[in-house]
Image 1 (cartoon, rainbow, N blue to C red):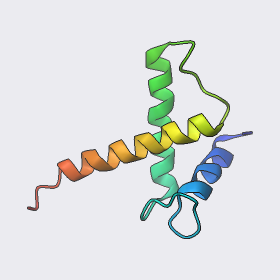
Image 2 (image 1 turned 60 degrees about the vertical axis):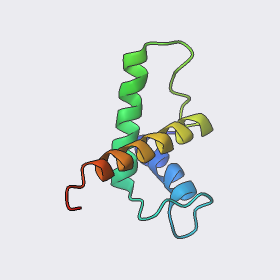
Image 3 (image 1 turned 60 degrees about the horizontal axis):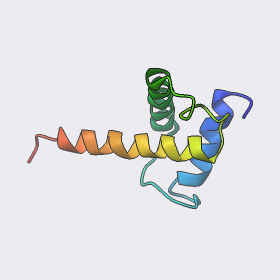
Length: 82
């Protein structure tokens, strides 16, 4: 990947709910951007040679997806309208 925007497009192409291979309902690029920043923070916090940025590879995409799922679960747990 050459830049942040290109990585967002790459992740979106896999997970968007129009024609993505693994659709995530109502996914937005803003949501991907937040998950990517959290993932980059996680890499920095772990400071582990085995947990690094892969320059936007498949592993990075899947780890960002994991953050999207975790973020959505956290939001659901905060839903007090029930």
